Length: 346
Image 1 (tube, rainbow, N blue to C red):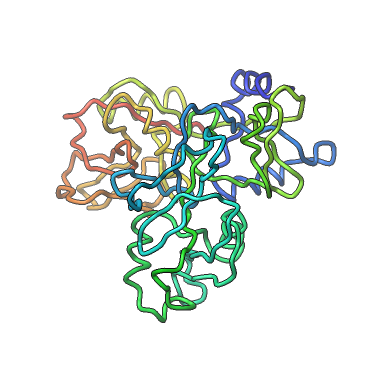
Image 2: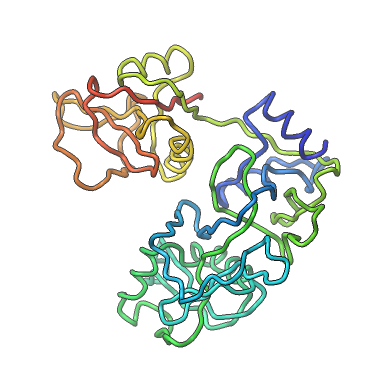
């Protein structure tokens, strides 16, 4: 089917064309292909955004313009809509950011969440394009350094925590980039896995994304016919406002349960839905028991992953957990608040 016909089919029979939120999602897609359709399938990414959006390379790290550290006069390009200056990637000099062509080559900083080498940040001394630097960091560490917090931590690390002490005057790639591409389901996931020399933003016909056999993506003419990936969302936002107990019964009557969050991937998907709520917070299936003095998920999952915001009140008997549009968890008195809520579907 064409991309648009595939989108219509997926929305009618599933949730939408596939959204890829991280490398795990990408591997899952590739593992689901068959010999009949080895590659070349549509995913839900399309170049239809009227203005460019800055994003961090590492999935789940949100860009906040108020925290940006641009050098005076930067950024000085209009991004992917600028047909003369394609300056869609960011280098850092003296703690200040400059937008520049992604095809330039610089040294770069990789972030390693697992500290495999005993180091959180690694300066890679070989010069690469931004895309090659991103691929190198993802293959060997976690990702290109992403977000203001990581950049601040990088500055304060003792010098023996990196492979080589940074030179302030030397430009280094960081994980900030911008594009005009957006997901069909409205998600703001920043994960991209473009192949070399992709996407073809200067080709007005190539506005839709497809997979390749090597696991990377390319842009293609949306009117071409290809196989495609659909996905079924495991959570759903209910844009009705209820107290926590009524929300719980609603989910159990119509779906499965109020949503539980047991890991970072769950958090990211639920957070994407919370952004679309009509109330400042949404109920989750998180509940406090006075009798046993602990928080629990109503689905009987153990509360291991946590994302409580700062300054939370003390625990009380009639408290439940809610999430704000930024993904932070807050404690709410059940009967005092009528909120939208998120149900799990399977």
